[in-house]
Image (cartoon, rainbow, N blue to C red; front, side, top):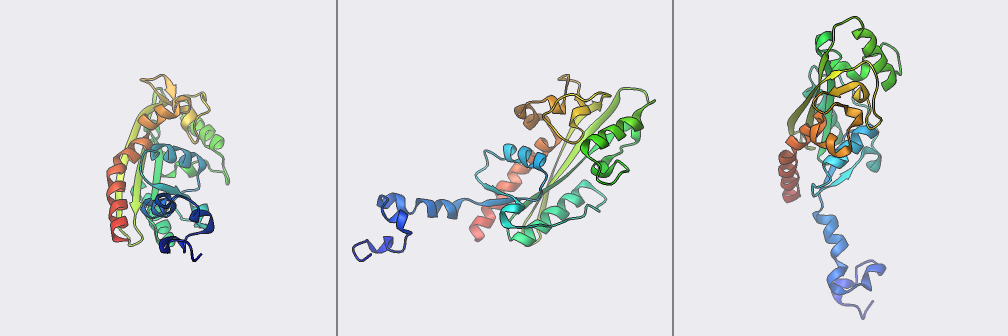
Length: 236
């Protein structure tokens, strides 16, 4: 240890043998790379959001990475309220900026239902995505087509101090009676985008990252994310 330069003596043993200009690189990267917590454990959402934020200079972390197990009830009257509840709960519990979202499917023939209750639309406990799709189609039977509809999403970005900023996105389409595609979740296999002739579940990831409601909300949130992450970095 005595023969090492003074600034190197406190480095981990494996780092001491690196060239002097490289020795501090892992430490510097760790310091300058901001972290963003995704306030969801939904694997489908996680995959989409990770792809959408791939070019953002940020390290994405999940609740499981921090050992967080929060159950946030979605009792708000709007998508924004529910998104904020999730983002704030995880931001305060982790001490990090958190991104939460809420979304829903609004079908005109059902007066905007299932809307806020899209995930809890089917009347059975522990209903699966397939159950919810089947129940929606059951409710639409006998109603004239096209069954026009839209997906809406709101993204909330929250700080541990309680600041919340929002961005929204929407995607217009229609419900079809047969399932098509395997690249989605939720109602994606029965949500057709007429201009493309494809359901949301038939889109490639690149297409979905341009056209989906969540993609548009995330894209609209990018300036907010950059500003808040930079500010938190400067304050830290």
